[in-house]
Image (cartoon, rainbow, N blue to C red; front, side, top):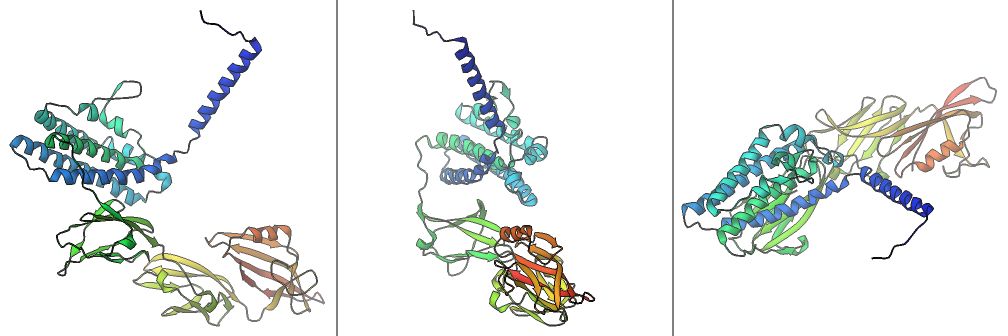
Length: 467
């Protein structure tokens, strides 16, 4: 008999309570999980796709000896093509929806575009066809990998539900790549009847690939990605994948491959170049069109009726019919310079337009030429920076500030408006200025002044500062 240890009822209750708390903690951890693991399937799909490309390259080298082998060979390629067409349906759905990270966690494609549609029927029929020909050719079955599937409770589940029920959008392509791997691996194993070796590649950095003559790394949306490749061996065939999708390149009379690709949205794109035994991984970035300007040659606050000048950084402006306009100012573009003449006092917007589409916007300010000049003064009454300022005060001592408004405009366009019923910078105004991001614009306007004799009121000239 084994020995036993007696514990008190109090300890027993404590152990039970501790076990219960562990269970609560595990459940809480499970139900509060963000599901962000789904994002990793994007990288895994690239790896799966590369494996399948190598397997397919191996399969294409096979020379069938009879009609039975030819049937399995042709059926495998046909079924792969069917899976590719389903995958393209998802890619089109993803592009149309511009799926971001949150949408990748949801399951709209599986539940609304796949499971109860003709795509699901096509998926099942393709698997059935592959199983039929494979079984007839080899006497073996793929049912355990394609049809006879079990849930965690060991109950039978049909293939569509097993692979696609509530499947997140970000996992769809990985599932389809898995099915293609099953087709390729099992077919190759049977047809070659030997251990196969997939073609190897020498992986290079972009800088180590002298055969790449042109490669755009960064450009603005609306421009094309351009790639030029001159093979060392004229017989080498070029393959290019952008974000995992094959892109065709044309070969000119000199044997140089030229590729041009028009991105549909801003962001980072992965590029894989394969030529002969060489393989290059790189990326390029597509920037959103936006106002970029030469700060020292630009004026952001001016006067009504007087021209203001903005010096543009043209590399951030896309080609095409780009216009700059404002409903409160006349705007004329001369190359990289904008001349803006405001119509009225106050904050106004300058828009960058492509046809009827607004690409970007910046805020400018126009002063009333006749308004009283106001400055920031420190506690001693001397002109100071915003950091040391204690109050707003007229530079003409005949006038005194009695109230003002402070507006903080973030680089993102978000605005925070605060009002002061005195001339002093209260703590909440200070806090808003301190919390403002670098590049934010601070505007002090709607400044009310009163004369010394208390008989006349006037508006002070706004102050516009960049943090």
